[in-house]
Every structure is written in structure tokens, then in C-alpha cells.
Image: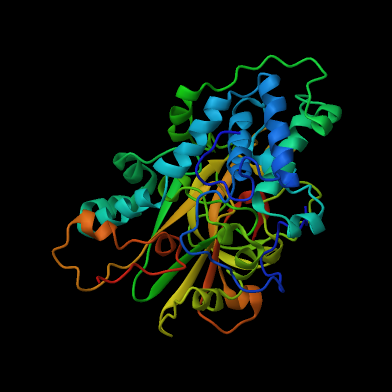
Length: 216
Length: 206
């Protein structure tokens, strides 16, 4: 969806404000929100793509005006409701009114193993790859109402395939509950001249799935 | 709410902000529901505050500077090479190492959210997740670099990497001059977090 999260190339946000010796968390609530998101994510029954999609449903004005952990909090509450783990009444007053769904919470000793376990989003391809390294491609002019990982600023632009990563879980399908639908994933190089019309030798790279691309 | 030593606006006794209250209520609800174990939350926080952070990535870079075979492995299969040092897992499932050279400077962003290589860099700083960085890194990378105090020679091309999938990028900065004969451990001390995102360079020897 063309939400506020898709901000590449937007203007007016001002300079980057880097903080010296920044702590990992700026307050206890941030650390608890992070840990809740992670711990509930392990047992909630939703995917990372559904999670990102839920964060993106925040109103654009709210998204731009709140911190990142507030985006996550919005996403977590959205998913808890959607998956029936809590009710709106429970979220409103913080008390348990409805019966719980049987879930086995992650025990503390299992945390390290879970966060450091090697994983993979690569899957068996559903067919042969359409493109090879060195091929010229153009991104499609897609404007899906649902989740996508093709940023707005890269739509309708020509680039070159510089890497092929195998078939990966396709977020546009996975976030919508249509399964993992693995598609070939490529790294595509675009010149800044192509994307922004600027006269530099600088380039932009993005990891894009085959359905986002067409042959030039 | 347990203390983690980093409380600022919501110390016990001080008035909690609305969002802090919201998180506190959510945690007690989810604990009451039996969905989370508060001790597991403590461990998660401690893990990313003390164990998984940019010192990991600095060790990867220092090894690449001192061990050409390891550097080659990083170029071919960064996930396996980094796993061999003991860093793997969440948000680092598919790693790619980007080597800076005098001709090419690499810089990483996630315009769509906050994708970042957790096993080697830990959780991202606020600026990396902020709208100014995400909106501008792809459009005016040199202006953003200048705000970080980095001015590149005209002849150096900037390559920006937008982390739009589950591939995570680690920049291998150029080894600073004047470090001949240094050990990997000494060199790791020169590798800043920002140099591994590409918004900084490795520090020069004092």
C-alpha cells in the first residue's frame, strides 16, 4: 500500500539527527514493547510479512509523527485483535475478560536459542528463473492496496540484475494470507540518473521479486 | 516493570507517559493470558542490550582485514562466513558483505521499515529508523553522508542498498592506514557501527 512507511524520496523531514553514544533503548517501555513484539511473535501464529503489513496500516499522519516502537505497538495490537488473542475491551482496560487461546509461552531459557537459530526465507522454486545476472529489467508500475516490498520510488524504472538469491517467500502473498508463494528474488541496480534524473554516477540497489519485474 | 538501568521518562515513582502506560497494561494482559513469560522478556532485553551488538560486526570486519581467505569467503557466502564466527539468527538469515574500496562506497538503508543485520550490529539506532534517513539516503546519499561528517572524493561512486527483502547487508569499511601489523583484536576497536552501515568510515589510529 502507498502508505507513509514507503518514504524513499520524500522531502521535508529535515536533517538526520544522530545521537552520540545512543543507548539500545531510551526508556523501559521501549524495551518492554520490543520484547513483547518478539515474544508474542514467536507464538502468535502470524508471519513477519503480516507483521510489517500491520504496522503499515497506521494512519499516515500518525505514522510520521510517532516513534518506531509505537509503530510496532500498533502492529502488535492489530495482530492480537486480528488473531483473536485479545478483545478490544481487553486492550482498552488491560484486564482479562475473555477466555484465553491455549499457547505455550517462550520460556526464558529458550530465548537465546530462538534468536540465534539460523533460518531461511529461501524455498523450492515454483518454476525456472526468468532473468539472469546482467539482464536489463524494468520494474512494473504496481499500486497494490495490500502489502508490497516494491517501493514507490522504484516503480517504472529500468535497472540491471546483479544478483540472484533463489526463490524466497513472497511478501505480497504471505502478508495477505495467501501462503508463501515463493518467487525468484533478484538484486537490481538502478542509476540515480534513472531514478532521480540527477547527473551522478551513484547507484541504488534493491532486492526485488520476479513479479515486480518485466523484461526491457 | 523490572528495572533495566536505562529508564529515563518512566522511572518508578515518576508519572508514566501515555505510551508507557499502554505498554505496561498490554504486558500485564498478555502475562495474565499466559501468552508471555515476563522472565523471557527480561532475557530478550538483556540479550540485545549486552550480547548482540556492533562489537560482533567489528570482529567480522577485523577478521576480513587480517585473513584474506576469510575475506574471500565473506564475498562468496557471507552468511556461512559470519556464522562460522558464531553470529547467526534473527534478521541475519541471508547476509551479504559489501566491501568499500577507493572507487566504491556502500551505504545501507531500509526505506520501507527498519531492516538491519541484528546478529552483527544489534538493534538499529533511532536515526536509522527515522524518516529523515529513510527518505533521503536513496535520493541524496552524499548530503546525508556530509551530515555524518563523511565527504568522499569525487571519483568515489556511492552505492546505496535498500533492504527491501530478507537479505541483510554489512559494509566492510576500508582498513585505515597506519595499522600495519595490528592484531584483529586491536583493529576491531577502530570499526565503528556507522562504518558498517556506510554512514561512517573506520576510525584512524590515535
